[in-house]
Amino acid sequence: MTRLAAAAAALFITLLSLSLPAGAQETDALTTIAVIEVSGLLDPVEVSYIETQVGAAEDAGATVLVLQVNSPGHVVSDERMVELLDRLESSPVPIAVWIGQAGGRAYGGAGHFVTIAARSAISPGSQVGDFGRLNGQDPDPRYASAIDHRYDDDSAVSEGIVDVLSPTIGDFLLDLEDSGVIPVISEQVTLEEGGTIQRQLAPGVQVQFGKLSLIDQLFHTVASPPVAYLMLVIGLSLILLDFFTGGVGVGGVVGAFCVLMAAYGLYVLDTRTWAIVLLVVSPIAFGVDLQTGVPRFWTGAGVATLVVGSFALYDGHDLSWLPLLVGIGLVASFMFSGMPALIRTRYGTSTLGRDWMIGEMGEAITDIDPDGTVSVRGAQWRARVNRLTPVDAGAPARVVAIEGLVLEVEPEEGGAIDYREMRN
Image 1 (tube, rainbow, N blue to C red):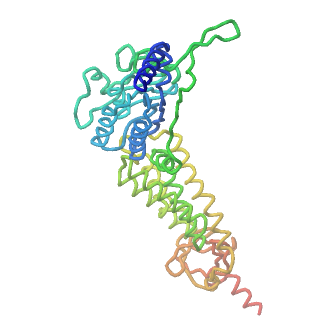
Image 2: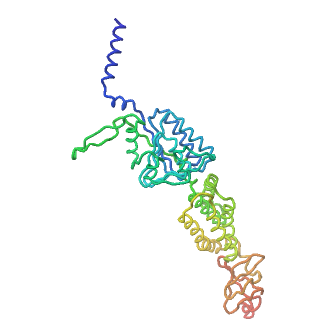
Image 3: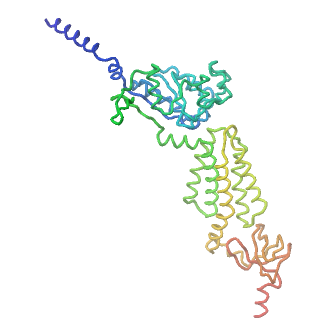
C-alpha cells in the first residue's frame, strides 16, 4: 500500500505540473537578471570587475548577464582583452550587450563585446565601431566593416553590427524574451486609464544592477585622461605651495595624494614620458622666479613646459579643450597671482630671519629706477629705490629694508644713510 500511495502521489504531482500554463512554469524557474554598467575606458579595474560579475552571475544561477556599455575603448593589453572576451563567450550564462544610455559609445575593445554577445542592442544616438584588431587578428567577417569605421544607431542595425534598436534597457529585456534568448519574464497588464494593454516584468523576476565599489570606482576614475591630467598639475602646484610655506601642511598632503593617484592613472593610460617630465619641470621653473620675486626667464620656461606637456601628454587618448583650459588656466593664475601674494604675506614678517640682509651690499643687475633687480650674495631679488636716488646697472646698492620679497635699496653713496650721518 505504501508503494501504491507513493506512486499515486507522484502521478498527481506530474499531472498538476502539466496542467500549469507554460508561461507560469518558465517564470517560476527564472531566478535573476544581472545588469552591470561598463563605462569609461576598459582598464585593469574594470576588466577584473566584469570577470568577477560573470562568476557571480554563474553562482547565482542568473538567466542572463547584460552589459550596459558606454566605453571609448580599452587600455589593457590586447592579450588581456582577448582573455576577457573568451571568459564571456565561454560562460554558461548568456551574455547580452546594450550600448546606452542615449549617446553611448562602444569603440575599440568595448566594441568587441557585440561579437560574442548572444544578442546585442543599441540606443538612439549611440555609436559603435572602430573595433581595431586585437593581437592583429581580424574579428568575425560579419564585423569586418567595423574595424576602422563607426556606425550610428540605425546604420549599426542595418549593417548587422548589432541586432536591434532598443531605447531603454527595459525594452531590451523584453526583446531578449521575444528573441528566445531568455524564458518568459513579462506579463500583460491592462491599465485602468483607457484600457491600454502594457507589458511589464512578471512578479518574482529580479533585475539586479551592479556597479564598481567605492575604492574601485576611485581608481577607475583617476585612470581617465582628464582626471589624471588635472590631478597631476594640481598636485604639483600644491606641493610647490607647501615648499614656500616652510613646512608640511594640508596642501602638501593633498598634493602628494593627487600626484600618487595621477601616477596610477598615467601608468594605466598611454602617455608620453617626456611630456610627463615637462609637467614635473614646470612648477620647478616657476619656483625659481618665485623665489627671486621677478618673473623672468624661468617663468617663461614654466609656461612653455606646462603648455607643451599638457598638449602632448597622451598618445592615443583624446583630451578635450575643457580640461586643458582648466589645467593651464588654474596653474597660470596660481603662479602669477596666488603664489606671489602668499609669499609676500609669508615672508613679509621678520620671523623668517631675513633681517640679516638689511645693511648688506649688493649689485644692481638692471637699472633700478625706481624698480629693478639686485643681486645679494649671489641671489637675485626684486628691488625698489627712492625716485630721487636711482641706481644704475652694475653699481653697488645697499639694502635698507625688506617688504615681502622686494628689497628697498639705495646707492652706496648719496643715499638716505649718508644724509642721516651728515645730519648727525
